[in-house]
Length: 230
Image 1 (cartoon, rainbow, N blue to C red):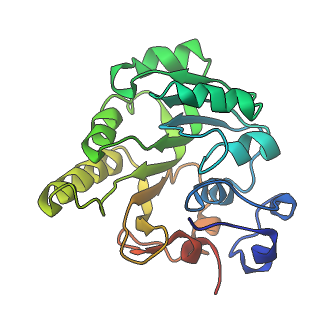
Image 2 (image 1 turned 135 degrees about the vertical axis):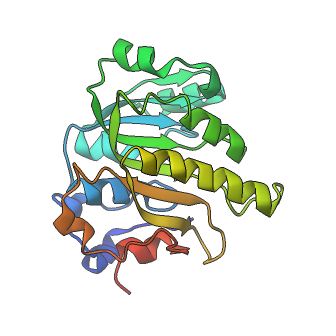
């Protein structure tokens, strides 16, 4: 797990608004810091977190909710995660459900989401389930300013051919809807455990912020090396 601490503040490639108040982050691989960076520390944002996991540990929305007053909805199939959300006093709800059986357009309506949602996390297993979930999102009616999409490309339980097909299909879908892949093949603890793609909506994200980063569809490097200077 790659973690941000306050001691790394001066290494941030972009010191977004209120970044100085963050003493630590909670994502597995800086996803929360990526979201805040691209949105310049936006307050009162919105998120949909598909595959939430624990309410705090290795969680992409905890920092957004607790320090930046975001509202949103988390989804997880494991009922025990609801206990975790209660234990950690999460203000925003978690829906215990199968992400592949949800009508997302109705979900957005029921939860009063705007047509432009700030952050979408897609992270369920195995990798073909994440791809099938992506296909359920009404991308023609709702947009997302930042997307972190877990490809699990490293997973050796899936053939390399199938992993490549799954990853490339997800990229084709998102690129066809106008998203920009700013960091492909994000790694966690080594430079070979490719597991995630990071996207932005170029119509929303400030181009001057994006220019500060070594963006590449084949970044093939650790998340910390994307967001921090050596």
